[in-house]
Length: 348
Ligand SMILES: *Cc1c(COP(=O)(O)O)cnc(C)c1O
Image 1 (cartoon, rainbow, N blue to C red):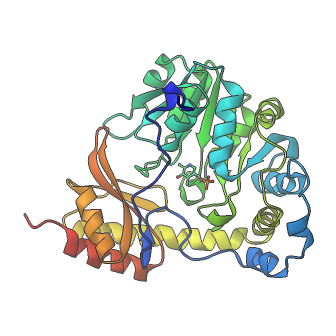
Image 2: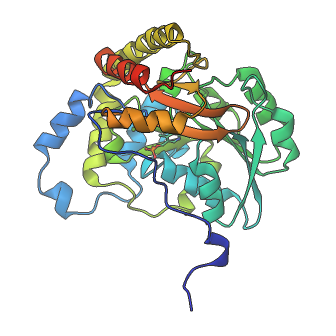
């Protein structure tokens, strides 16, 4: 007798190989710290924010997001991280057994969220230059097509032309995951969520906004789509404190966020040059991390962790092979990463 579902037998919880390290460049969070306004809210929090329920469906947070995104509150849904929003979108907009299309490689949680909602993952390889295979994505027939822009783990930008072509021809909804949009030279695609009835754009407080531990994400789209997604989520997805801190950050600390993002982008390009000097070629990146194709990346990352530097290693990515993904932050941390990498590289 087992309680396990046969379909889930090979599913395992997400456990990136990581260790508590002195320098953590493994998860693309904001290494410059947290927004000052959010810190103030945290320090001044009273008993009510702990002992009482927050307002259901987070209307205060929706208003703050709406102002930031240039939409009305009824165009906003929120969740416990954008992970949770993506999970709710898949559940809300697909019937059991249907396909969910996405590029390969992309965000590792997407096929997992598809499967736990009884959906069929339909991966479509990126083209050789890491651009979107629009025809391939459409050929799956999926009613939900997920696009990560900029893409994780490659860091590559998604072109406006390819996204617009996809949105124009998609039989259903295009879900654009913009976890890294604040670092993108394109400025993101919120305008598509505002103008197209079949587009949802997700964003997060976890990366540029420096609040990963608070678990807050959101999506913007037409009021009709948002209302469907809200059916798939519970009423109390945020700790009251997380909601209050996110509202403060969105209302008061957008300039703080932009300044950190600019520094991250400058350091990213400086880091790329330093890697080049070591004979390593990182992919072009539009995000706050670099992907470095490197044979034996798993072992290199293990040796770096021995030296107190955590980076993310990928094995056998489609079309790219093994690779290291390194988050970009304050320059002294990147110098430590370079030193550890130099030591850890196999001599050939
Ligand atoms: C980090 C990340 C997220 C989500 O993070 P949350 O903390 O759940 O908001 C979503 N998509 C991608 C591609 C990410 O890298």
